[in-house]
Image (cartoon, rainbow, N blue to C red; front, top):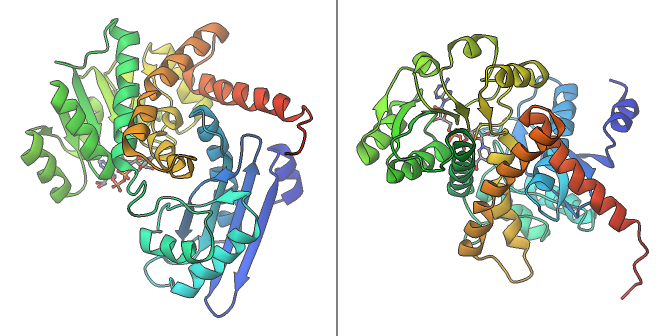
Length: 357
Ligand code: NAD
């Protein structure tokens, strides 16, 4: 990989390689863009097959955070850290404290939080060394209920576009994956009187939603073929692909999973051609990051205020649909346009001289 060529292509600001022998820390801190404010994005710990894989993953994820944070209307830029290692074997206190010191050394340019392989206990070690860390206990905590609530609000906006009413009462909704986010999504849907059909790989997760909400279960491979109004992918990425597109029988795709379109260009266009309404993943699933961002509000964290902000995902999904219509583009592209419009406006504002206080 020609690194500077790649960084230039997508306009990355800073990549920081961090290593510490005693603790075994090998981390790459990626700051993609700080036009809107400090780069906010979690830390992922993964046993990558190669350093190149780790670098590419972090680069891709940090750029994704720039777009997600912009689309959510947050005053945060995009960043992400990857730590190379096995999250079940290689962690220790010193690793996260060393990492925390390096985050601190960035002087507020980057704020971290949990991502795959990282838990609250790890972040509490980071917190010993820096205040540039979110997702802490007794503050915003587990983002999943907020992600689920935002997804539910975005789904209602999509229903409004498809049916002229945002009521989900009586609508048949399939939810693929009833883990942390899926459970709460099913809860909202059941409370509104939707007919919910779910799939998951784990018996215990299925039992929980069946016991609590009396939903119907189908085998994982059968979920795509269920004749329904709305399909909510809430498990895996790349789930909209050549195979599933042949099977899907729904009007709307609106779920929390990241990177749903296997090939965004091709599959986004095909959804459009089939007349299916797609609520873009990084807009509809932004409730979690809105909630983490609230930890940094000048007034301090407040769960009710956070929930009110998450509810605006309804308006954000409507805005995506407006842009798609205005520009004659598929909705996944319209999401990028919405994010870029905000970034460009702020870049213009930032270029105006501001006297020092
Ligand atoms: P999770 O691991 O708690 O739950 C995922 C569930 O999907 C698990 O129960 C798993 O068994 C199930 N699953 C996996 N493969 C499946 C398959 N083929 N068919 C059916 N079920 C399958 O994860 P989560 O935190 O609930 O996140 C779900 C999705 O939402 C992920 O794509 C995640 O990246 C995305 N997301 C989550 C958050 C959050 O706040 N947790 C925020 C933004 C996006």
